[in-house]
Amino acid sequence: MITLAAAVLALVGVAGPAHADADVTDGRVSLTVHGHGVRVDRVDGWLTGRHPGARARLYTVYQGSRTDLTAWKRARVRSAGRQRIMQATWTPHRRLPQGAWLCVQYDGADGDPCARIHR
Image (cartoon, rainbow, N blue to C red; front, side, top):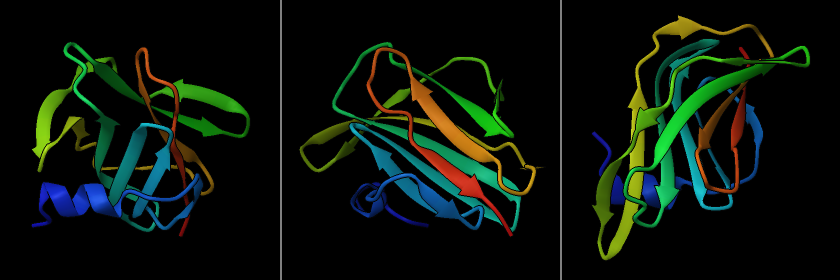
């Protein structure tokens, strides 16, 4: 299992293609997707800094339409050395359409990173 510090260090980049396995960062918000092909098994949303009461949700964008996949979920505080990070985790175990964008949104935070899901 990957450690929190290693996961945080791996979160670099800009929105881009993903083989249902991606690490994407936009501002202080990061998205980690684990899966195979177009099947998404686990998604982590990260928000840098400690933000008590922070909430996150997942949504998709496909063929120009946005669909909320989850309701708002309260994030938990995690530590990576001296850095505080908010984390929300989902295990959807579902297939997304080829070419769909999977995104995470934190309320009150700039940045909505998205990963394109493809085979």
